[in-house]
Image 1: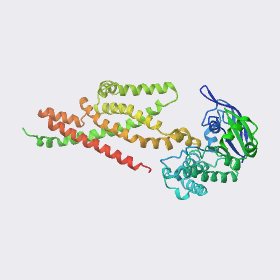
Image 2: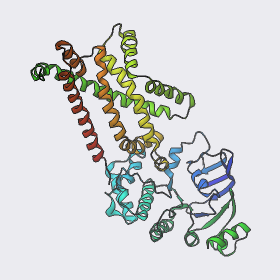
Image 3: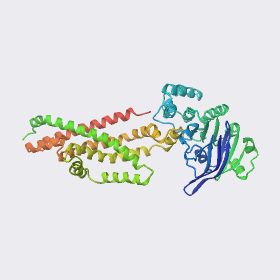
Image 4: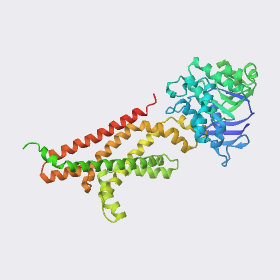
Length: 240
Length: 218
């Protein structure tokens, strides 16, 4: 579903991603872990071209994102993204946040967008918040709305960029719960996170990144219980 | 000699006419200045250096030279060049709009750049193109933040429109000067004119305060 070949990304002289190669299958949940500055967020942001790519190729369902002919806006409708800082639109109510893209990009009617939006809000347990503004929500609620907003475009893949890192500890659970549910329904997911419990429980595969490379990848159980690389061991000994 | 209210009463029809023209000039120049200002502000943020530089020069010129000089250039130079003779109202509208646009451009730029970059990223990640994201996500938020500085600019514009009296545009200040010249008096015409300007600028401020409250999302 996603093929990443020799992906390189530099900011000026600073090479963040050095040579990333990975295939992600449909319905797979891939969890990316690693120390800060390892390039994991940059890697995720390359997958929907929020960062331009310096070298290599990313293919999503066979479409090469680096090809000039590829309509990046079209690709992005298939790739949902959830941000650490939620990035809800503060001037729109919760339901308007969810309805915006389906109406403007997919040209569906307000009526239909609203019905689907309410359905998604029900799914993340926030139907009663449909008509409030994001500022009145807790962090956990905001992130659940952000997930619903991304799902409204019916993406084939969901990218999560440290979705629980900006949350108070007691709110992490409610967001992870929604993500677990999504995984169970067969959504293809790439998750950058520091939640090792989630990685172990929900991940089908864990990528450990450091210094711009994928240092090690394996089943969660293997990575956590039997890491092969020294750097993986050192990292895990600090976070577990 | 007492304060001649009777002379003011005599001039009320002229002051009314002048006030209407001042309001008209201000509204047209505000609208034109805002539309131009948005374009120039976006132009200055363009990634292509030559384009950005062009708009930068525009802003530098119109902010760095007196409006009075600009008005003369437009009135005696630009307008006759295009229509063959001078026209005070046209010159006033053009000069005020071009001048205000330079300031409004900077207000737009500051407003747009003050919006967290995550907002643009979230909009683009949902598949909106750049224009769609600007229109639906960035500008509505930026405009809310721009209301106080825009209000300032509109108030300045109303006051600056009084310069038009010099090029014989029959707006409010023009009639103040006419009355002063007619009767050789100072206090009556200019205090009256000042009070009318004060009513206009205060109304503008109140209007924008109400708009700001209506756009609140809390």
